[in-house]
Image 1: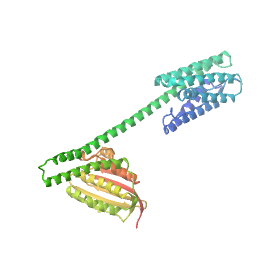
Image 2: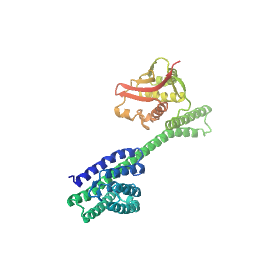
Image 3: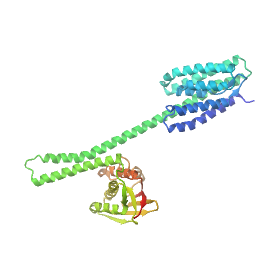
Image 4: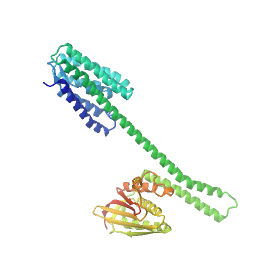
Length: 416
């Protein structure tokens, strides 16, 4: 003969195993406590499972662990009316007898009781909620056990007391603890995300204000010099030119930030990759000469991609300029293209100092630059955003003392 304790322990293990798939599902929609649809489904399935694995003591008494999912759902999800009704309906399938009326009375009372105390329950501390739900389950388990013993149903008394006064409270305590721990971990996770976002905003605000303040301070200084009556005409034009350049520098910082924030592709057109890269290299040739850098090309056959010409230029100007400025002692840069049936690959290779694994992992982060005080990191951030908006990908490989390779991949749209 199977003992009731063994039967209920097996039932409890199934309830705990069943909890984890529902928690994984609920994580896709938010917290387990807030998403009542999934919580209600778990409680319904658990109660039905308990009835399917019930233990019949006599013709009118059927024992199981229905109280465990009922207490959890009633206290943590405030579903006591629905769960109480489900328990009563399922008990009716075993027969409308004395046991049915007892279940109707006890679960009807519990449904009303839990409904009214649930707002107070949520105001308790985590440990207090676990303790309260366990104690309530223990009290009603003792009451049911005494009821069964008073009516002298043919049953082993020790097995009955161990099974029904230990296992249900233990099950409620375990499930309550799991729920509280997952809720706490989710709360900490959201707080961490919030703090990371605030930190990123602070860094971004500090960097932008710093980069805009420098040219504006310079422009203000020269504007004050313009007030001097004895200023020569040539100097005045020179100062005005400097003020214009500083204001344009501030405008570029704002433009880079807006491009990073909203890198929408405004106008899509067919771009000849080789032709666009040649155009960019002509623009950057004076800067390369200034740093004593030789830029060479190795282009494949003519290929096309779709994208915004202005954004494409901005992306590769930012990357190549960053590479040039990183080669402070001169060096070589190779621009290379490859084609496949589906993609166009653009390589930018340099012979610089390279980057460590830590620097490589941080590349593209808000306001992280490998160029020290000269850089803000905005250029790389903007480039990453533009490539993503155009449906492309970036892969960067680097080795200390050897150099860095940027690999861009875009979808090919055909030849002439």
